[in-house]
Length: 256
View 1 (cartoon, rainbow, N blue to C red):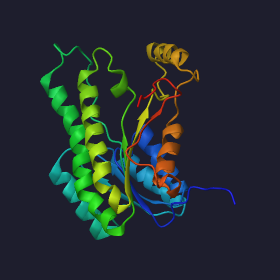
View 2: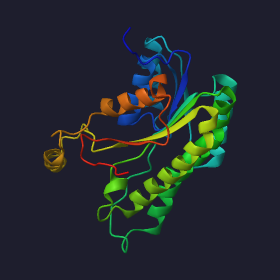
View 3: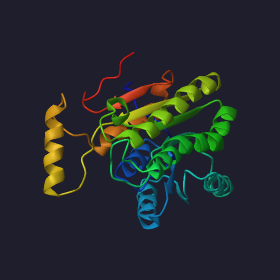
View 4: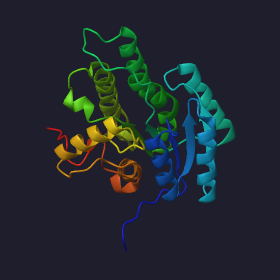
C-alpha cells in the first residue's frame, strides 16, 4: 500500500493564511483532509475566498482575525475557535510582520527589533500557550514554525529580522523538549527565496541572480513549503521533533 499524507479528522490553524505561503499551506492541508482555521490580521476578503476554496473541497473552514503578537488578540481567537469550531491539532506559525528597510545594526530603528520580537518570538509563545495544552490533553499535536534561511546566513543589514527568527528558533527548540513526552512534535521549516508574482524588473533580476547560486538552480515555490508543512503535520513525521529543515534547494546547509 502506498504511503499517503492523511489528515482526516484533524484541524489545522495557519497564521498569516492570506499571504502567498499561508494560502498554499491552507490548501495543501485541506487537500490532505484537514479542516482549517484561517487566520488573518486585516485581509478578511482574502480569508473569505480561502474559506470558500476549502469548503469546495468538502472540508470545514473557520476564520479568525487578530494580531498574533498581542496576548489579548490570541486569547480572543482561542475563545472564538473553542465556541464556534474546534481547537486545532496542528498549528503553523507563518505570520510575519510588516516589511521595513533593512539597514546596518547602527542604523536600524529600535522599533524594528521590537516589531520582529513581537512577530517572531511572541507569536510562537502566545500560540503555544493558547493551543498546545489541547494537544497535550489529546496526546497528539503538531506545532510547525516557519523560520527562514536568513537566520542561518546572518548577512549584513538583516539583524532585526535575524534576531527575531533566532529568538523564535530558541523558543521552539526548548518547546520541543518540553512537550515531546506528550506525543506533540515541534519543528521548523526554513524557506529560501520563494517565487513571487512581482513583475518589477529589479526584483526579477535579483531573483535570477539568487537562483544562479542555488544548487538546484531555481527559486522555491509556495507549494514546496506547503508540502513540507503537510509532511510534518502527518503521522509520517511522528518521530521528527526539534528539527530545523531548510527548504531552499540546497542554498543553505545546517550543521550539526
